[in-house]
Image 1 (cartoon, helix red, strand yellow):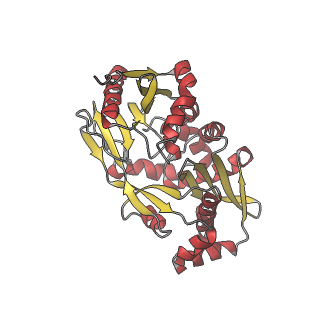
Image 2 (cartoon, helix red, strand yellow; image 1 turned 90 degrees about the vertical axis):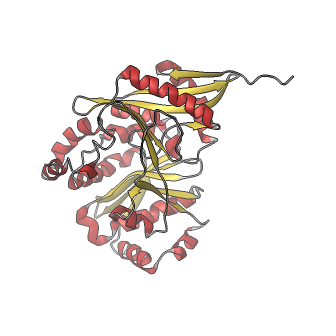
Image 3 (cartoon, helix red, strand yellow; image 1 turned 120 degrees about the vertical axis):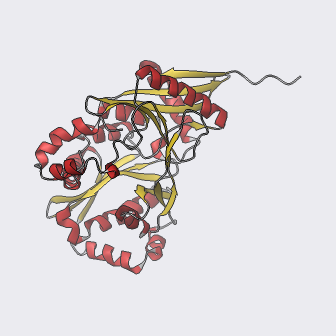
Length: 353
């Protein structure tokens, strides 16, 4: 008679228990996912950098991890309470070898959403999970990813002549391209904060990026382009098991005529090849938008983004900029001094899932 399959155990890890399990959980994720966004270490970076309470649902069979689902409890007086996997990042949700395991973990996440009395549970999947509680889906955006050749020379030859010309124009402006970590953080953040103000978007706090570097000591690095000693563009790059992502990148509007942004992305792609990652993830975009076209010109192709929701109150698009509800706030924000947006922005944006 065959042995019965071990019973599945669902655990909700938090605090010290989560810290003790982190190495095991992260190894499980790294063996199955190419993206650096799937690392469980993001719970530490987001929890410390944004001040959120973090959890991880773990499924186990016979004492062995069978699935994980990282979760962040986002709450603010302004917007309410949410349970998200994961805020700031484009990818999250369940990691499991079997859909039955993923479904069982979602069961626990739904129960936690009820316990925390959140407006909604948000799972940033790439492939949908069939679960009765996940009754709402947003799939209007796509991940833009570029398969990379083995050398920068081959990548250069793959570009359209227009892209090569824009990079060459950037090179004529004598930018200093600097790679590093904490010593470049202020330069990166100065550019990032000003760009977010110009876009009318509250800026994440400096501490978030400092915590990302701390939790990803071998994978995260900063790239800054300087001209005449002043930073004009900057990005944070995170290298995963089989993919590199750029969670945040900015260039100053005053530097747009110098093609600093094009030159920076050329160096980001080259760095990814140097680090031996075969795929570069430009991030999510709405099909046909300006950012979509920017990414497409490099050769990036769209991949599905399927965000699933268990809605307990309100609607899934209540906080989306595309709704038009925040048009006036965006216009006002663009007129504020940067120093003020650096103080107010982190307090606001941490409450937006």
